[in-house]
Image 1 (tube, one colour):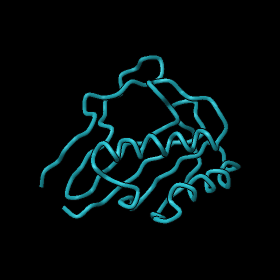
Image 2 (cartoon, rainbow, N blue to C red):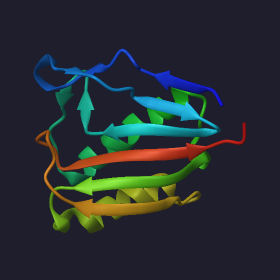
Image 3 (tube, rainbow, N blue to C red):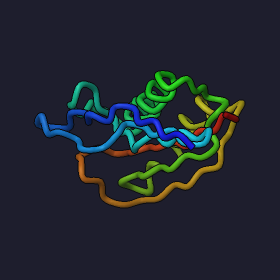
Length: 128
């Protein structure tokens, strides 16, 4: 089995901090996308839960596309919200994006290491 790492040089986090992990790893037909927050160019994009959810998901989709995966390839999503009151609003965004191809999902509430409202990661699969 071949393992391919995307963005293995690491990204840039808040305050210019180097992020020491791959943005995604592909192995055996699976693509594991690292947790994405509502950030652009290493800076948090302010906004409500809807805007932040859209951007976090879009960041995942962008990484998937760069690895040759599509929305229909998503098999599982992990979601971290910082407040349980965000659940319904996040679900609306989730349905907008994944409506035709709903993946399995877990959603939890806890603190995040970056001052954002949501973090999303995805697992995709395409037969090798």
